[in-house]
Amino acid sequence: MAAPMDTTPHESGAPMDITGVKIVQDPIKGKCLNATRSFKEGEIIFREKPIVSCQFLWNAMYKYTACDHCMRSMETAEAMSRRLANTPSLVLPFPQCCAIRQEEHVTCPHCQVVYCSESCRQEGWNKYHRVLCLGPSVNDLEHPINKLAETWRNIHYPPETASIMMIARMIAMVKQTADRDSLLQTFSGFCQATTDQEELMSHKLLGAEFQDQLELLRGLMVEALYEDNLDQWFTPDGFRSMFAMIGRNGQGIGTSSLSVYVHNCDALELPSQDREKLDAFIDQLYVGIEHESGSFLNCEGSGLYSLQSCCNHSCEPNAEPAFDESNYVLSMRALRDITQGEELFICYLDECERTRSKHSRQKLLRENYLFSCTCEKCTREAEDPDVTSSEEEEDDEDGESDEH
Image (cartoon, rainbow, N blue to C red; front, side, top):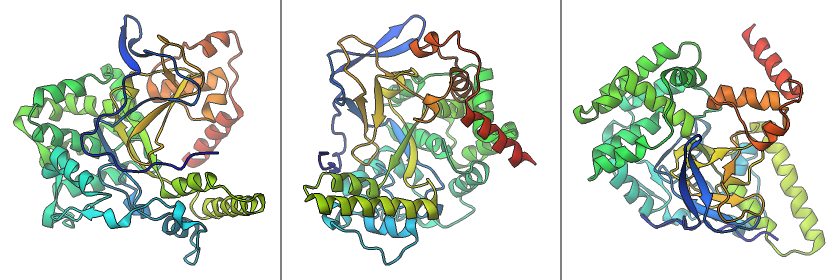
């Protein structure tokens, strides 16, 4: 039986549990993350907040409401279900399973950006929002930051995998911090790429016109946030490096009040007949949502995480990141028993992609992460023929049909 999901907001600056791991420098692989004690399957290895994170810009267009700082969903599960299923009269049973605390929601008094709590509003203001707050210009389409956001939306359509606003927040954080050198060193510690790799990543995110689009975005970023002391980030080469860095290191984040509601419903102690009735209701609810809204169910965004970014890839991972607090706090969970000293591996592919053939997996990793995998699974399958998975063939056919 699943335990009810704890969605209590973390206080600003609260330490995360990172005592069970250490960063190790490998001469070949670079940074690795190793366990300093043993972990059982299903155990949380560590939790961490992102150094920086932000929602994807298309969330608002799809009417998702989430905390501007921690990304916690601010819709009730019932309101989210009604919107996604396009059923205004829908009533969810067991409303106590919805964890949304609307009485705690606050807004920025200057620009009306929404937060799930006063602690998130204060943390956002202290870290970056003092620079990025639009104040009375929030609806001014000619404001440089609004122009930057709108240009990005017109370039990068859903499903989004990065956001130009991540760079804007990084710049704002450096402008606001009292320890600029330390923060710059933290950002420089994320995986960097060669010039060729940066161009490949930019092409992947923006498409064939990436060079012109990068220059357009850079010009708007200069207009919005330029500062002499950060001029290295605003040059064409520096901006491309920043863009590639967030594309390569960004960890996707997804939050949903509906998923929390369903998790808490699973934890209810019910008579078997009532359990069957509730499960059937939830199954039918998801059928209706998929019919109306497809798979775009969560408030989505991206973040840079110090420890998660040190985890190397394996097609047979022993750990996986999860967002079980329904906000930006990342929980790394053991997929099997892990021994002390063992390196932690996560899979950069989704559940469907990791079941594909070696040839297909390698193709996806080269295209999206710019490396060839040498994990134990790929090594075992080294002599396998270069067979393309049926899913990849379907994807290629869809891509070809879209071009005509």
